[in-house]
Length: 255
Image (tube, one colour):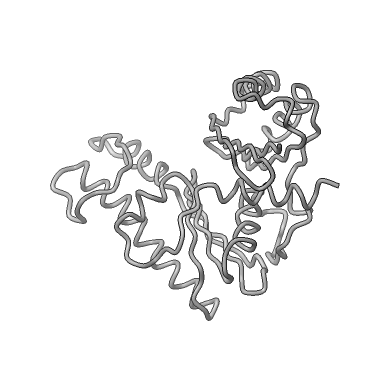
């Protein structure tokens, strides 16, 4: 079995693969204050609970939080006796990075682009709804040519509450109408439907620059909320896309 760990700014997603099958997933908060031992004990506990400790034979870590990458690698080594692979722009991959500075590319975006190139018809646009909403664009020749980074839904919602006196905090959900009849509905319309309109417009601009229609894949927890009422802008929702990409990259780099 393979342990894959995707460390995001807000949450860390953990997957367990048995060959090509994702058999279990877990999620915890990404907290730079937690120690190697705290994360190690957590990993050991969830694996013990699922009778998987002795079955884990490899691990890969992807992180956009530099402080936590080594913490998790240390935890895996100390508690599972496994030396985890750390994903970076220098790793072997089935795509070619063609940005001005490949060092700037987040490891999660490399995993997303890898998964897109393996699973879907190219060119492909991957939209990942995390703390930020990111677009990763892979052209027809499997080149990772760049992307888009925008504030995520939670950032927008928190900003409205933080910087205005009368606007409340709210739960992110799809509004029934564009015209809000109360403050909450008006905020949800601006945040969710406004985000959806941004995505629709950006997809059109990306396809124009690609000079081609693209396969559009969404991942991340807010994908269903954003696209449940959308009209033909999305081809697939793939919530485990990043974990799948990490699994593929592990096998390319394990030696």
